[in-house]
Picture 1 (cartoon, rainbow over the protein chains, first blue to last red):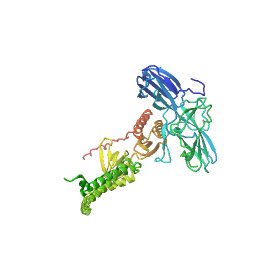
Picture 2: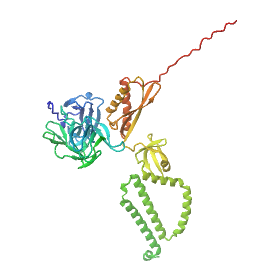
Picture 3: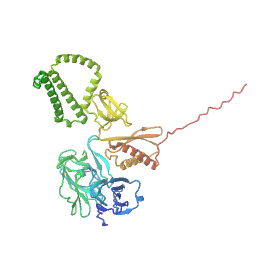
Picture 4: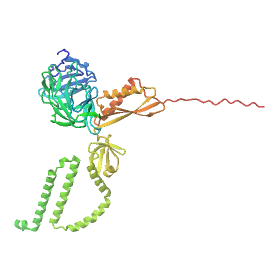
Length: 269
Length: 270
């Protein structure tokens, strides 16, 4: 594990739980995980805190069963295989994420801006041989939010806890978050006053940079006419802000190429 | 003893063969028509009703063909049927009204199977939409049968039609409380609850002033699937937050004054 200020530990990979009936513990950012192996059965527990800025990390280690807090969510899985391995994978959110700029700002007609949006990662845990997905846990449970023109017409999304910025977030890289670079082009004839922005994170792939920051594919949203719709293009190449990117996460669902979607929630300028 | 050849060529056998042929054709046609028509585009309940109507229609036509094949005079039957229809019509006005109301309900679709609706005093899940009635299953597991005519005439509230719902909490605070502080506290409670929607935003609405208190409504939103869970959790969290901050619901403030009558001074007897 690296303690350098601008890198973060890798928490995903293959873990061998050698002892039967022994509880093992991981702590990554806001998420704590416990696992215990029994013959033909896996026992998993998890709990998240509200502190999204924490970079606490504890690699896999043994703990007593009494150390598991009673408030942790527990689940048990019957499996046919009996190998001692658990595989952790990183995945992006399973719904679009809605974010707000730190301060409302306007994008004049003809201008473009690049925003950086952070969204939580999910930890997907598999048993191995045969490989079975056991659970799909967010590092922290974002709040639900509705994105649409009315309360009857819209889509259920997650609300990003952090604001979108025009600069890459400074400070320590967080291993439980992914960053998306969104280019917004206002090709319409009026001002775009940005209040909220919806990102289809569930249709994106993600890459790991050399600084261990997780980057999703870049998105370009082009607004060509008045209103809240934009044509969305996902850049199929590696994200341009990532250092030596390596593909890490596949999309949860395929994106529609050049889709026109409701992407903005705006104020009338 | 009649031989096989004469049997096969007799009129009776021809009629029997015709009847058999019409039966087989009718059966096959009804199956094929139901399979080939694009009924899968319809709601499952409508598929069932449409396929039944098609099968009954083809069965009726088959019976008519068979009767004609065996030489039955249909005009006599039609005459009797006409008289019978008038009698049945008078007797089944309500059923006919329910049937037609059912067709209107199917076309308008104010609700579908699985929706939770309130009709009058009854609330339940729609378990079936039949030709004559709609059946609701209440939350305490009772079955309510509502004739379609009543459904069409009544105000039907579809609780689960839209994907999100609002929960209103009526709260009461004494005049001594810092209302702005309470609003901030309740906003934090809503923000902390992940199934409470961030948008639409929670809202406050002052409802009025009482003798020693102020009433207001605190409204939050959740998806219809999470509504019950959010309703229970938010009430607990609001109460816990108010208690933690020392904010209590006011009790009625009464001032009691005892009015003593003036002492009676006896008049002096002169």
